Length: 345
Length: 293
Image 1 (tube, each protein chain N blue to C red):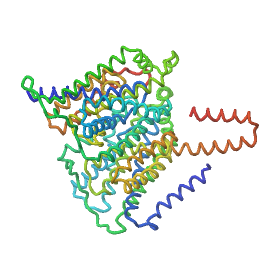
Image 2 (cartoon, chains in turn brown, orange):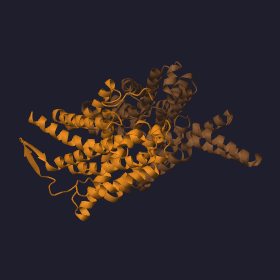
Image 3 (cartoon, each protein chain N blue to C red):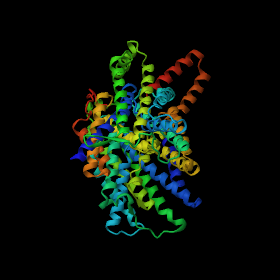
Image 4 (spheres, each protein chain N blue to C red):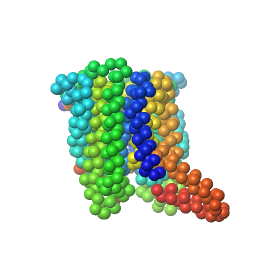
């Protein structure tokens, strides 16, 4: 794809998202839209560390929860009134999550990849139980209420919607910059072969830790908006077990380690999940359907939609080309080479 | 003081049960190189199967294992054949396995909620509330039975892995898949049977778990995170490590519950893991890898 088409498409998509409120006003629709945007930002954040370096985290909600609690505690402690001011504090929430990420990353990154997955889960549970048990600061299981805003009616969702959209744009820009910088190349080198990367002069430890912190910063910001939109925060909602896996699933569905994959995954999976919950949630059938769908997608497209579909498309095109121009024996040879190229990727 | 000894005793008894559930998980990881995050829901499924047999056919929960363990073995073989086998041995295998097994767990969780409703249940037996006293401490029979069952099965597992021909193939596949295949071991078959055994153990784990606590399908999340912590602490793929890690973890979290209150018991559980990994990133009994992967 040439760049003009790419940027044009991106711009059109952004304009579509910006003008969405002109066409719809249904509050349920916007609630789902806001969560989809926020999920997309956090999947991008997850992808910046886990997708680029290959160190998969299943405790990413630790950071969204930290961000949410930071904003709630600031608002509660300094009696900040509802409205636009809490939005200005969202970067502070991201910063606090990033500061927490430093020691957490320092511990977690000492382990190898398999163990790392479990350590992230453990760190997540530690934070969740601290939120529950340090009730002097966090309000315990009853949580903290956010200050109410004076927005009403159709307008109520708009500030949240546009802030979420702005956050997504920021996240995409950060991810894009990293992916196209020397720093990002270093991260990808770590994913492919850490020892070789370090041998070639990549400061693997500093690269991994900094990516971990950047990804926590984005997570903290999205978590803060998520919590503010919900109006209240308590341990089980802020440190949500299912969100941990959802973030990883969305990234894998779209294409882990790619730029567009996380957004695609979030835009597909989150509305679907909401729809299934509304439709079948009362009977738990939604879990069965969701699980079966995920199984099918992961087994058919293990590299994600964003990687597999273009590949299939290319294969189809070359196959077509080959069948019209080459004799049969040659065709088999080409198909063999194609297959090999696919395997080794 | 006597409170501490009581906590120590119940920690050891529960530790045996966790060792049984976790050893299936660590075996599966060792041989297949995947993290079976569905182990938690499979334990709950095992508990529900015994529950159903007890409710409808009045079969004793421990006797029902004669039916549920083979059934779960077959289920495990089915899961391996249908899903696990299709995962390629690439960099992303572990992560993909986590997602696939999570999807399997979602399906099972949904089905369990539909069949049994999300209300919490517990297993019933005439002796479920009976206790006996030993040196002034009251112990529930069920906990002791569950511990004995776990001990017997762990011993059987140990003999199977270390003193049979199948065990030799299993350990060879664990050490080096390719080399094992080269010397004529049918690694695929070994993998399938290992997965089946790992899942069959969850049936027994389920009875032991369900007899000592109330449960529903959602209990699996807490269960699987504890099991994962245990196998990491023990050093992934090490049976011996898993056994000691379970005992240590359960005893310490029970002691913490006595000292600081039950709400801190799982915090201590996870903090302990993190602290230990700072000093021994490979776990208690794990081997350091030559290359950091």
